[in-house]
Amino acid sequence: MKALRGMKDIAFEEAKKYLYFLDIASNIAKNYGFSYVETPILEETSLFKRSVGNSSDIVNKEMYQFIDKGGHDVCLRPEGTAGVVRFFISNKLDRVQQKYKFFYYGPMFRYERPQKGRFREFHQFGCESFGEASVLEDYTIIEMIDAILKKLNIAYTLEINSLGCNECMPSYKERLVNFLEDKKEKLCQDCQRRITTNPIRTLDCKNNDCKTILQEAPKLPEYLCNNCKKDFELLQKLLKENNITFTINPKLVRGLDYYNKSAFEFVSNELGAQGAIAGGGRYDKLVEYLGGRATPAVGFAIGIERIIDLIKLPNEPREGFYFGAMNDEGVEKLLPLVKEIRKNKKAILEYTPKKLKAHLKAADKVNAKYCVFIGEDELQNDTLWLKDLEQKEEKILTTQEFLQMLK
RNA sequence: GUGGGUAUAGCUCAGUUGGUUAGAGCACCAGAUUGUGGCUCUGGGGGCCAUGGGUUCGAGUCCCAUUAUCCACCCCA
Image (cartoon, rainbow, N blue to C red):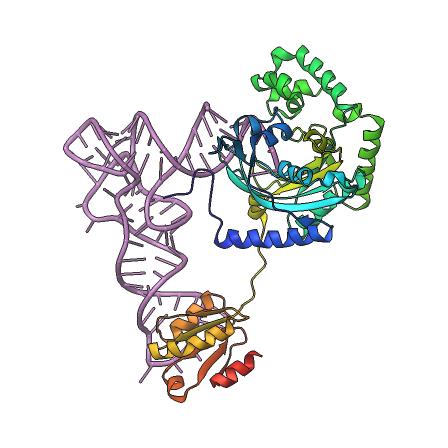
C-alpha cells in the first residue's frame, strides 16, 4: 500500500515545518489586514477554464476532472485564486463598494509528472486583495511576502515585470507574433506551437537557438502605455526605497492567463529546476470576466512544499513531563497525575515498567523537560522522584507537593 | 507526454572480473558491580536483494520486460 503517484503524507519533521510556516504566514497576513477564507476543493470545471485560461497546460491536460453523479463537470482545484474570486462574486461582494482581503491555504491538484519540488497534490498559501487599484497594494503584497520569507530565514531573488493592460498588451502581442512568424522555421517545435497558443511564453524558452533569436524580439516593458509605465516605475521606486532588491525580467510571464500589469516571482536557487517559491500579480479583469462587477485585484500564492524544503526549524526547547515506573503498581499510581497535568501541559506516560536508566533515556528521547519516576523506595514511602532534565536537579516529592509545584 | 538514472535491513548506502552462511552506519532492544539521561563499549533482533522471465553448473551481480521512484524537458507554486 502506497500513496498515489505524486502524492505524499506530511508527517514528522515536515509536518512541524508545515505548521511552523502556516503560523508565521497567517499571522503576517492578518497583520496586513487579510482574513481567512476556505473555499471548496472541488469546483465546476468551467470556473478554471474561464479563469486560468485556455493557453495554459494546467487546464488543457493537468486537471483532475470528472463527471460527478449528478452529471456535473467538476474538477479538483489546480490553483487557489479562481475559487476565491468565485466566492467573492457569489457572495456579491463585488456589489459592495469596499475593499476585501482574504488569505487561504490548502491542497491543489495537477496531474503532472512528479519531480523535485513538484507534486500532483501540493499545498499553497495565498492572498487575494479585491477593490484596490493602487500600485501601492502591489508593492505591499510583495513587501508582505518578503516579510514572511525573512521571518523564515529563506533567501530568494525577486523578479518583477509588467504585463501591461488591455490597451498595451494586445498591440505588443501582435508585434511579437509578427516577429515570431518571420523566424518561424528557426524556432524549436515548442515555440512554433506557442506562436498560436501562448506567444509570450516563447520569451522564456530554454532552447539555445530560440534564446539567441529572441534577444532581438520586442521587449514588453518598452511597449507599455503611459499608465502602466507610471505604475511600474512607482513599484520599482517603492521597492528600492524599502530595500527589497529585485531584478526586472522582461521575460517573466505568469502561467495563468488572468494576470495583467504587475507580475512577480520569488525564486530560490536551492531547489533545482522548480525554483519558484512564490508568484503572483495583478488581475484586474478576472472578476468581471467571471461575471462580477469590474473589480481590480492583486494576489499571490506560495508553494508550501517548496518552502518546507528550505525551512530550518529553530531548536525546540525541552517541554512537558515524562512519567515512568519500575513496576505495574507504580504505573497505575501515575495515571491520575498524568491526567491532571494534561489539563494544560504535555505529559507522556510509559506503560511498560523499566529501570530508571531506561526511563531517563526515553525521557531524553521525547525531549521532555521533567522525568517523574516511581521506584521501590517511592512506592514504599508514597513519594515521587522528579528530575529536571535541563537543570539536572532532582527532588523527592509527595503527590500533594508535586501538584502544588505545578501551580 | 519525452529523455536519462536508480531499485539490497525501518532509514542512508556498500557488495570487487558472476562463486559457499548478503554487510556497514543510523534507528530499535538488552547488557557494561544492585536507582541516574545525551557520549562510549559489547551483544541481539531484523532481508523472497522491486516483480516476472531469460543466460549459466551457479545470478544481488549479466540480458529482456513490467512496476515504482528520482532528476531533467515540458509546465508552474
